[in-house]
Amino acid sequence: MAPILYWMRRDLRLSDNPALTWVVQQGRPVIPVFCLDEVVETWGAAPKWRLGLGLDVLRGSLEDAGARLILRRGQALDVLRTLIEETGADTVVWNRLYVADERTRDTAVKEALRSDGLTARSFAGHVLFEPWTVETGSGGYYKVYTPFWKAVRDRDPGAPEPAPKEFAAPEVWPQSEALDDWDLGRAMSRGAAVVAPYARVGSAAAEGRLGHFMAHGVADYDSGRDKLAEDGTSGLSENLTLGEIGIRTCWAAGQRAMADGKPGAETFLKELVWRDFAHHLAYHTPHLTSENWRSEWDAFPWSDDNDLAEAWRRGRTGVEVVDAGMREMYVTGRMHNRARMLVASYLTKHLMTHWKVGADWFADCLIDWDPASNAMGWQWAAGSGPDASPFFRIFNPDTQAEKFDPRGTYRRRWLAEGQAKPKETADAFFEAIPESWGLTPGQGYPAPIVDLKEGRDRALAAYKQRDTGQ
Image (cartoon, rainbow, N blue to C red; front, side):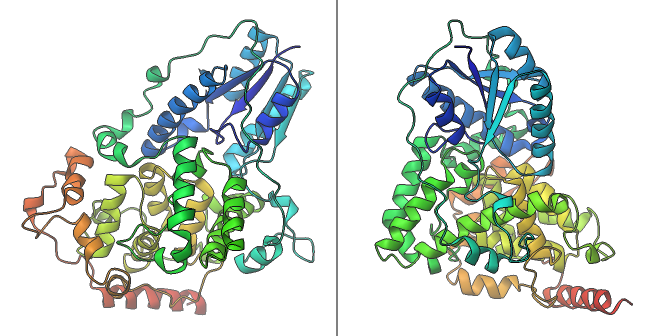
Protein backbone atom coordinates (compact mmCIF):
# COMPACT_ATOMS: atom_id res chain seq x y z
CA MET A 1 0.00 0.00 0.00
CA ALA A 2 2.87 2.39 -0.67
CA PRO A 3 1.51 5.66 -2.05
CA ILE A 4 1.69 6.63 -5.72
CA LEU A 5 2.92 10.06 -6.78
CA TYR A 6 0.77 11.54 -9.52
CA TRP A 7 2.91 14.19 -11.20
CA MET A 8 0.59 16.80 -12.72
CA ARG A 9 1.67 19.16 -15.50
CA ARG A 10 -0.63 20.21 -18.35
CA ASP A 11 -3.51 18.10 -16.99
CA LEU A 12 -5.15 20.24 -14.33
CA ARG A 13 -8.37 18.22 -14.23
CA LEU A 14 -9.89 15.15 -12.62
CA SER A 15 -12.06 13.76 -15.44
CA ASP A 16 -10.88 12.44 -18.81
CA ASN A 17 -7.51 11.85 -17.20
CA PRO A 18 -5.89 8.49 -18.06
CA ALA A 19 -3.04 8.68 -15.54
CA LEU A 20 -5.35 9.60 -12.68
CA THR A 21 -7.87 6.94 -13.65
CA TRP A 22 -5.14 4.28 -13.52
CA VAL A 23 -3.87 5.50 -10.16
CA VAL A 24 -7.31 5.41 -8.54
CA GLN A 25 -7.94 1.92 -9.91
CA GLN A 26 -4.93 0.66 -7.96
CA GLY A 27 -6.72 1.39 -4.69
CA ARG A 28 -3.54 2.78 -3.17
CA PRO A 29 -2.96 6.19 -1.60
CA VAL A 30 -2.38 8.87 -4.22
CA ILE A 31 -0.38 12.06 -3.75
CA PRO A 32 -0.94 14.65 -6.52
CA VAL A 33 2.09 16.89 -6.98
CA PHE A 34 2.85 19.86 -9.18
CA CYS A 35 6.46 20.91 -9.61
CA LEU A 36 7.56 24.40 -10.58
CA ASP A 37 10.46 22.85 -12.45
CA GLU A 38 13.11 23.65 -15.03
CA VAL A 39 10.57 23.72 -17.87
CA VAL A 40 7.80 25.68 -16.18
CA GLU A 41 10.30 28.27 -14.94
CA THR A 42 10.94 29.25 -18.57
CA TRP A 43 7.31 30.13 -19.27
CA GLY A 44 6.41 33.71 -20.06
CA ALA A 45 4.54 36.21 -17.91
CA ALA A 46 0.94 35.52 -18.95
CA PRO A 47 1.17 31.70 -19.15
CA LYS A 48 2.82 31.52 -15.73
CA TRP A 49 0.23 33.85 -14.18
CA ARG A 50 -2.61 31.84 -15.73
CA LEU A 51 -1.02 28.64 -14.41
CA GLY A 52 -1.23 30.05 -10.91
CA LEU A 53 -4.97 30.62 -11.29
CA GLY A 54 -5.43 27.09 -12.60
CA LEU A 55 -3.47 25.53 -9.76
CA ASP A 56 -5.54 27.40 -7.21
CA VAL A 57 -8.80 26.05 -8.64
CA LEU A 58 -7.36 22.56 -9.01
CA ARG A 59 -6.28 22.61 -5.38
CA GLY A 60 -9.88 23.25 -4.33
CA SER A 61 -11.21 20.46 -6.57
CA LEU A 62 -8.79 17.97 -5.08
CA GLU A 63 -9.64 19.01 -1.55
CA ASP A 64 -13.34 18.54 -2.31
CA ALA A 65 -12.50 14.96 -3.31
CA GLY A 66 -10.51 14.31 -0.16
CA ALA A 67 -7.05 14.82 -1.63
CA ARG A 68 -4.40 17.54 -1.57
CA LEU A 69 -2.19 19.17 -4.19
CA ILE A 70 1.43 19.17 -3.11
CA LEU A 71 3.44 22.05 -4.55
CA ARG A 72 7.22 21.92 -4.77
CA ARG A 73 9.78 24.05 -6.57
CA GLY A 74 13.01 22.72 -8.07
CA GLN A 75 14.42 20.36 -10.69
CA ALA A 76 11.73 17.79 -11.45
CA LEU A 77 13.85 14.73 -10.70
CA ASP A 78 15.16 16.19 -7.47
CA VAL A 79 11.67 17.08 -6.29
CA LEU A 80 10.25 13.65 -7.10
CA ARG A 81 13.12 11.83 -5.42
CA THR A 82 12.71 13.96 -2.30
CA LEU A 83 8.98 13.20 -2.17
CA ILE A 84 9.65 9.51 -2.67
CA GLU A 85 12.00 9.56 0.30
CA GLU A 86 9.52 11.50 2.44
CA THR A 87 6.46 9.39 1.61
CA GLY A 88 7.74 5.92 0.81
CA ALA A 89 6.14 6.06 -2.63
CA ASP A 90 7.39 3.45 -5.07
CA THR A 91 5.52 4.58 -8.20
CA VAL A 92 5.35 7.85 -10.15
CA VAL A 93 2.88 8.41 -13.01
CA TRP A 94 2.07 11.26 -15.38
CA ASN A 95 0.40 12.09 -18.70
CA ARG A 96 2.78 12.45 -21.62
CA LEU A 97 3.81 15.68 -23.36
CA TYR A 98 5.50 16.04 -26.74
CA VAL A 99 7.44 19.30 -27.08
CA ALA A 100 11.24 19.03 -27.00
CA ASP A 101 12.03 20.48 -23.56
CA GLU A 102 9.15 18.61 -21.94
CA ARG A 103 10.18 15.32 -23.53
CA THR A 104 13.81 15.81 -22.51
CA ARG A 105 12.76 16.37 -18.90
CA ASP A 106 10.31 13.47 -18.85
CA THR A 107 12.68 10.99 -20.47
CA ALA A 108 15.42 11.82 -17.98
CA VAL A 109 13.00 11.46 -15.06
CA LYS A 110 11.66 8.11 -16.25
CA GLU A 111 15.12 6.65 -16.87
CA ALA A 112 16.45 7.87 -13.51
CA LEU A 113 13.49 6.61 -11.48
CA ARG A 114 13.59 3.21 -13.14
CA SER A 115 17.33 3.00 -12.46
CA ASP A 116 16.42 3.67 -8.81
CA GLY A 117 14.29 0.51 -8.89
CA LEU A 118 10.99 2.42 -8.91
CA THR A 119 7.97 2.18 -11.20
CA ALA A 120 7.62 5.14 -13.59
CA ARG A 121 4.66 5.10 -15.99
CA SER A 122 3.35 7.64 -18.46
CA PHE A 123 -0.03 7.74 -20.17
CA ALA A 124 -1.68 9.31 -23.20
CA GLY A 125 -3.90 12.22 -22.27
CA HIS A 126 -2.81 15.50 -23.87
CA VAL A 127 -3.71 14.74 -27.50
CA LEU A 128 -6.29 12.63 -29.28
CA PHE A 129 -3.83 10.41 -31.11
CA GLU A 130 -0.25 9.99 -30.00
CA PRO A 131 2.30 11.10 -32.61
CA TRP A 132 3.81 7.67 -33.27
CA THR A 133 0.39 6.10 -33.86
CA VAL A 134 -0.39 8.18 -36.96
CA GLU A 135 1.77 7.13 -39.91
CA THR A 136 1.70 7.61 -43.66
CA GLY A 137 1.40 4.65 -46.00
CA SER A 138 5.18 4.46 -46.17
CA GLY A 139 5.51 4.48 -42.38
CA GLY A 140 6.66 8.06 -41.91
CA TYR A 141 5.08 11.01 -40.16
CA TYR A 142 2.65 13.41 -41.79
CA LYS A 143 3.99 16.76 -43.00
CA VAL A 144 0.72 18.11 -44.41
CA TYR A 145 -2.44 18.62 -42.41
CA THR A 146 -5.17 17.43 -44.80
CA PRO A 147 -3.84 13.86 -45.18
CA PHE A 148 -3.30 13.82 -41.41
CA TRP A 149 -6.94 14.76 -40.86
CA LYS A 150 -8.13 12.07 -43.28
CA ALA A 151 -6.00 9.49 -41.48
CA VAL A 152 -7.57 10.13 -38.07
CA ARG A 153 -11.06 11.49 -38.64
CA ASP A 154 -12.71 8.07 -38.34
CA ARG A 155 -10.56 6.85 -35.44
CA ASP A 156 -11.94 6.43 -31.97
CA PRO A 157 -9.72 8.10 -29.36
CA GLY A 158 -11.63 6.37 -26.59
CA ALA A 159 -14.32 7.60 -24.25
CA PRO A 160 -13.38 10.11 -21.55
CA GLU A 161 -13.35 8.70 -18.03
CA PRO A 162 -15.41 10.34 -15.26
CA ALA A 163 -13.71 12.08 -12.37
CA PRO A 164 -12.99 9.79 -9.41
CA LYS A 165 -15.45 10.23 -6.58
CA GLU A 166 -12.85 9.77 -3.87
CA PHE A 167 -9.14 9.24 -3.35
CA ALA A 168 -7.30 6.96 -0.98
CA ALA A 169 -5.21 9.26 1.21
CA PRO A 170 -1.75 8.56 2.62
CA GLU A 171 -1.38 8.24 6.38
CA VAL A 172 0.58 11.49 6.43
CA TRP A 173 0.54 14.13 3.74
CA PRO A 174 3.91 15.64 2.80
CA GLN A 175 4.38 19.37 3.26
CA SER A 176 3.40 21.64 0.39
CA GLU A 177 4.89 24.97 -0.51
CA ALA A 178 2.50 27.94 -0.58
CA LEU A 179 1.22 28.93 -4.00
CA ASP A 180 1.32 32.61 -3.06
CA ASP A 181 5.02 32.31 -2.26
CA TRP A 182 5.70 31.32 -5.87
CA ASP A 183 4.37 34.75 -7.00
CA LEU A 184 3.57 33.42 -10.46
CA GLY A 185 1.93 36.69 -11.47
CA ARG A 186 4.91 38.88 -10.67
CA ALA A 187 5.92 39.50 -14.30
CA MET A 188 2.33 40.37 -15.25
CA SER A 189 2.46 43.39 -12.95
CA ARG A 190 -0.58 45.64 -13.34
CA GLY A 191 -1.76 43.76 -16.44
CA ALA A 192 -3.03 40.90 -14.27
CA ALA A 193 -5.93 42.94 -12.92
CA VAL A 194 -7.00 43.89 -16.45
CA VAL A 195 -6.83 40.36 -17.87
CA ALA A 196 -8.32 38.54 -14.87
CA PRO A 197 -12.02 39.18 -15.69
CA TYR A 198 -11.57 37.50 -19.07
CA ALA A 199 -10.01 34.28 -17.77
CA ARG A 200 -12.25 31.23 -17.45
CA VAL A 201 -10.37 29.12 -14.97
CA GLY A 202 -10.72 25.47 -14.04
CA SER A 203 -12.56 22.40 -15.23
CA ALA A 204 -16.06 23.57 -14.31
CA ALA A 205 -15.57 26.79 -16.28
CA ALA A 206 -14.13 24.86 -19.22
CA GLU A 207 -16.98 22.37 -19.30
CA GLY A 208 -19.46 25.24 -19.10
CA ARG A 209 -17.70 26.94 -21.98
CA LEU A 210 -17.88 23.74 -24.06
CA GLY A 211 -21.56 23.25 -23.26
CA HIS A 212 -22.42 26.83 -24.21
CA PHE A 213 -20.52 26.55 -27.47
CA MET A 214 -22.23 23.30 -28.40
CA ALA A 215 -25.64 24.79 -27.65
CA HIS A 216 -25.18 28.20 -29.24
CA GLY A 217 -22.03 28.42 -31.35
CA VAL A 218 -21.02 25.24 -33.11
CA ALA A 219 -23.81 25.33 -35.70
CA ASP A 220 -22.44 28.58 -37.18
CA TYR A 221 -18.79 27.82 -36.47
CA ASP A 222 -17.81 27.63 -40.16
CA SER A 223 -18.47 31.32 -40.75
CA GLY A 224 -18.66 32.67 -37.21
CA ARG A 225 -15.07 31.79 -36.31
CA ASP A 226 -13.72 34.29 -38.84
CA LYS A 227 -15.90 37.25 -37.85
CA LEU A 228 -13.66 39.45 -35.73
CA ALA A 229 -16.39 41.22 -33.79
CA GLU A 230 -18.35 38.09 -32.89
CA ASP A 231 -17.78 35.46 -30.23
CA GLY A 232 -17.84 32.66 -32.78
CA THR A 233 -15.22 30.32 -31.36
CA SER A 234 -15.26 27.93 -28.44
CA GLY A 235 -12.60 29.80 -26.46
CA LEU A 236 -11.32 26.45 -25.18
CA SER A 237 -7.68 27.01 -26.14
CA GLU A 238 -7.16 28.66 -22.74
CA ASN A 239 -8.33 25.52 -20.96
CA LEU A 240 -6.88 22.92 -23.29
CA THR A 241 -3.34 24.23 -22.97
CA LEU A 242 -3.36 23.57 -19.21
CA GLY A 243 -5.50 20.48 -19.52
CA GLU A 244 -8.40 21.91 -17.54
CA ILE A 245 -10.62 19.99 -19.96
CA GLY A 246 -9.72 16.76 -21.72
CA ILE A 247 -9.30 16.72 -25.47
CA ARG A 248 -11.42 13.54 -25.71
CA THR A 249 -14.23 15.34 -23.90
CA CYS A 250 -14.17 18.01 -26.62
CA TRP A 251 -14.00 15.40 -29.36
CA ALA A 252 -16.99 13.51 -27.96
CA ALA A 253 -19.02 16.71 -27.80
CA GLY A 254 -18.13 17.53 -31.39
CA GLN A 255 -19.12 14.05 -32.52
CA ARG A 256 -22.49 14.39 -30.82
CA ALA A 257 -23.01 17.74 -32.54
CA MET A 258 -22.22 16.12 -35.89
CA ALA A 259 -24.74 13.37 -35.19
CA ASP A 260 -27.28 16.08 -34.42
CA GLY A 261 -26.66 17.63 -37.83
CA LYS A 262 -25.01 20.85 -36.63
CA PRO A 263 -23.14 22.17 -39.69
CA GLY A 264 -20.06 23.56 -37.97
CA ALA A 265 -19.29 20.46 -35.93
CA GLU A 266 -16.90 18.88 -38.42
CA THR A 267 -14.93 22.13 -38.66
CA PHE A 268 -14.65 22.14 -34.87
CA LEU A 269 -13.32 18.57 -34.96
CA LYS A 270 -10.82 19.63 -37.62
CA GLU A 271 -9.55 22.36 -35.31
CA LEU A 272 -9.03 19.81 -32.54
CA VAL A 273 -7.05 17.69 -34.99
CA TRP A 274 -5.07 20.78 -36.09
CA ARG A 275 -3.92 20.99 -32.47
CA ASP A 276 -2.97 17.31 -32.61
CA PHE A 277 -1.06 17.96 -35.84
CA ALA A 278 0.99 20.66 -34.11
CA HIS A 279 2.06 18.18 -31.42
CA HIS A 280 2.61 15.50 -34.06
CA LEU A 281 5.15 17.77 -35.76
CA ALA A 282 6.67 18.94 -32.49
CA TYR A 283 7.34 15.31 -31.62
CA HIS A 284 8.74 14.21 -34.98
CA THR A 285 10.56 17.47 -35.78
CA PRO A 286 11.53 19.02 -32.41
CA HIS A 287 13.11 22.05 -34.07
CA LEU A 288 9.59 23.28 -34.98
CA THR A 289 9.48 25.45 -31.86
CA SER A 290 12.91 27.03 -32.24
CA GLU A 291 14.07 26.96 -35.88
CA ASN A 292 12.66 27.22 -39.38
CA TRP A 293 10.78 24.01 -40.03
CA ARG A 294 11.87 24.19 -43.66
CA SER A 295 15.65 24.59 -43.68
CA GLU A 296 15.57 26.40 -47.03
CA TRP A 297 14.33 29.44 -45.11
CA ASP A 298 17.45 29.69 -42.97
CA ALA A 299 19.07 32.15 -45.37
CA PHE A 300 15.94 34.28 -45.82
CA PRO A 301 16.70 37.95 -45.02
CA TRP A 302 14.36 38.39 -42.06
CA SER A 303 15.38 41.05 -39.56
CA ASP A 304 15.83 40.27 -35.91
CA ASP A 305 14.10 42.47 -33.34
CA ASN A 306 13.91 46.09 -34.51
CA ASP A 307 12.08 49.41 -34.13
CA LEU A 308 9.28 48.39 -36.50
CA ALA A 309 8.72 45.24 -34.48
CA GLU A 310 8.56 47.37 -31.34
CA ALA A 311 5.79 49.47 -32.91
CA TRP A 312 4.00 46.22 -33.74
CA ARG A 313 4.43 45.03 -30.14
CA ARG A 314 2.94 48.26 -28.80
CA GLY A 315 -0.09 48.20 -31.10
CA ARG A 316 1.12 51.34 -32.88
CA THR A 317 1.68 50.27 -36.49
CA GLY A 318 -0.99 52.56 -37.93
CA VAL A 319 -2.80 49.53 -39.39
CA GLU A 320 -6.01 49.39 -37.42
CA VAL A 321 -6.84 45.69 -37.52
CA VAL A 322 -3.26 44.73 -36.64
CA ASP A 323 -3.14 47.14 -33.71
CA ALA A 324 -6.61 46.05 -32.57
CA GLY A 325 -5.47 42.43 -32.44
CA MET A 326 -2.40 43.26 -30.37
CA ARG A 327 -4.43 45.36 -27.95
CA GLU A 328 -7.05 42.65 -27.56
CA MET A 329 -4.25 40.37 -26.41
CA TYR A 330 -3.08 42.80 -23.71
CA VAL A 331 -6.59 43.30 -22.34
CA THR A 332 -7.93 39.72 -22.53
CA GLY A 333 -4.83 37.53 -22.68
CA ARG A 334 -6.13 36.03 -25.92
CA MET A 335 -6.53 37.11 -29.53
CA HIS A 336 -9.10 36.24 -32.16
CA ASN A 337 -7.67 33.55 -34.43
CA ARG A 338 -8.22 35.59 -37.60
CA ALA A 339 -6.40 38.49 -35.97
CA ARG A 340 -3.52 36.18 -35.03
CA MET A 341 -3.04 35.32 -38.69
CA LEU A 342 -3.12 38.96 -39.68
CA VAL A 343 -0.67 40.24 -37.07
CA ALA A 344 1.70 37.34 -37.82
CA SER A 345 1.55 37.88 -41.57
CA TYR A 346 2.09 41.62 -41.12
CA LEU A 347 5.15 41.19 -38.89
CA THR A 348 6.84 38.52 -41.00
CA LYS A 349 5.98 39.92 -44.42
CA HIS A 350 5.19 43.62 -44.40
CA LEU A 351 7.79 44.25 -41.69
CA MET A 352 10.13 41.42 -42.79
CA THR A 353 10.81 40.46 -39.17
CA HIS A 354 11.66 36.91 -38.12
CA TRP A 355 8.72 34.84 -36.94
CA LYS A 356 10.60 33.95 -33.73
CA VAL A 357 10.30 37.59 -32.61
CA GLY A 358 6.53 37.32 -32.79
CA ALA A 359 6.30 33.78 -31.44
CA ASP A 360 8.39 34.71 -28.41
CA TRP A 361 6.20 37.74 -27.74
CA PHE A 362 3.04 35.66 -27.92
CA ALA A 363 4.68 33.19 -25.52
CA ASP A 364 4.97 36.02 -23.02
CA CYS A 365 1.51 37.54 -23.49
CA LEU A 366 -1.04 34.79 -24.20
CA ILE A 367 -2.89 32.98 -21.44
CA ASP A 368 -3.71 30.24 -23.98
CA TRP A 369 -0.11 29.82 -25.10
CA ASP A 370 0.63 26.32 -26.33
CA PRO A 371 4.25 25.81 -27.43
CA ALA A 372 3.44 23.51 -30.36
CA SER A 373 0.41 25.38 -31.69
CA ASN A 374 2.08 28.76 -31.25
CA ALA A 375 5.17 27.72 -33.21
CA MET A 376 3.24 26.00 -35.98
CA GLY A 377 0.86 28.94 -36.35
CA TRP A 378 3.70 31.43 -36.67
CA GLN A 379 5.63 29.28 -39.13
CA TRP A 380 2.48 28.71 -41.17
CA ALA A 381 1.95 32.47 -41.42
CA ALA A 382 5.60 33.16 -42.21
CA GLY A 383 5.82 30.48 -44.91
CA SER A 384 8.62 28.53 -43.26
CA GLY A 385 6.40 25.87 -41.76
CA PRO A 386 4.06 23.06 -42.77
CA ASP A 387 1.21 23.54 -45.21
CA ALA A 388 2.87 26.72 -46.45
CA SER A 389 1.16 28.30 -49.46
CA PRO A 390 3.25 29.91 -52.21
CA PHE A 391 5.19 33.04 -51.36
CA PHE A 392 2.51 35.36 -52.74
CA ARG A 393 0.12 34.59 -49.89
CA ILE A 394 0.43 37.94 -48.13
CA PHE A 395 -2.66 39.08 -46.27
CA ASN A 396 -3.68 42.65 -46.96
CA PRO A 397 -4.82 43.71 -43.47
CA ASP A 398 -7.10 46.47 -44.76
CA THR A 399 -8.87 44.11 -47.16
CA GLN A 400 -9.13 41.50 -44.42
CA ALA A 401 -10.65 44.09 -42.08
CA GLU A 402 -13.26 45.04 -44.66
CA LYS A 403 -14.17 41.39 -45.10
CA PHE A 404 -14.18 40.20 -41.49
CA ASP A 405 -14.96 43.45 -39.64
CA PRO A 406 -17.06 45.34 -42.20
CA ARG A 407 -18.60 47.74 -39.68
CA GLY A 408 -15.38 48.39 -37.81
CA THR A 409 -16.88 47.03 -34.58
CA TYR A 410 -13.81 45.01 -33.66
CA ARG A 411 -11.45 47.90 -34.35
CA ARG A 412 -13.50 50.36 -32.29
CA ARG A 413 -13.65 47.86 -29.46
CA TRP A 414 -9.88 47.95 -29.06
CA LEU A 415 -8.70 51.30 -30.45
CA ALA A 416 -9.37 54.35 -28.29
CA GLU A 417 -7.58 57.03 -30.30
CA GLY A 418 -9.89 59.20 -32.36
CA GLN A 419 -13.07 58.19 -30.54
CA ALA A 420 -14.96 60.80 -28.53
CA LYS A 421 -16.20 58.08 -26.17
CA PRO A 422 -13.93 55.06 -26.44
CA LYS A 423 -15.13 51.66 -25.33
CA GLU A 424 -13.99 50.51 -21.90
CA THR A 425 -12.14 47.72 -23.64
CA ALA A 426 -10.17 50.23 -25.69
CA ASP A 427 -9.24 52.32 -22.65
CA ALA A 428 -8.23 49.17 -20.75
CA PHE A 429 -5.30 48.73 -23.12
CA PHE A 430 -3.57 51.72 -21.54
CA GLU A 431 -4.07 50.21 -18.08
CA ALA A 432 -2.67 46.82 -19.09
CA ILE A 433 0.55 47.77 -20.87
CA PRO A 434 3.85 48.60 -19.18
CA GLU A 435 3.96 52.15 -17.85
CA SER A 436 7.40 52.47 -19.41
CA TRP A 437 5.75 52.58 -22.84
CA GLY A 438 4.32 55.97 -21.94
CA LEU A 439 1.21 55.60 -24.10
CA THR A 440 -2.01 57.55 -23.55
CA PRO A 441 -5.22 57.86 -25.61
CA GLY A 442 -4.49 61.56 -26.14
CA GLN A 443 -1.42 60.90 -28.25
CA GLY A 444 -3.47 60.35 -31.37
CA TYR A 445 -3.38 57.39 -33.68
CA PRO A 446 -0.14 56.92 -35.67
CA ALA A 447 0.26 57.00 -39.42
CA PRO A 448 1.17 53.62 -40.96
CA ILE A 449 4.81 52.79 -40.26
CA VAL A 450 5.05 50.93 -43.59
CA ASP A 451 3.04 51.48 -46.75
CA LEU A 452 1.13 48.25 -47.32
CA LYS A 453 1.92 48.08 -51.04
CA GLU A 454 5.58 48.84 -50.51
CA GLY A 455 5.78 46.26 -47.74
CA ARG A 456 4.12 43.64 -49.91
CA ASP A 457 6.41 44.39 -52.86
CA ARG A 458 9.49 44.15 -50.65
CA ALA A 459 8.39 40.77 -49.30
CA LEU A 460 7.61 39.48 -52.79
CA ALA A 461 11.02 40.54 -54.04
CA ALA A 462 12.71 38.76 -51.15
CA TYR A 463 10.69 35.58 -51.71
CA LYS A 464 11.44 35.56 -55.43
CA GLN A 465 15.12 36.06 -54.72
CA ARG A 466 15.04 33.12 -52.32
CA ASP A 467 13.34 30.90 -54.90
CA THR A 468 15.80 31.78 -57.66
CA GLY A 469 18.82 31.52 -55.34
CA GLN A 470 20.12 34.97 -56.31
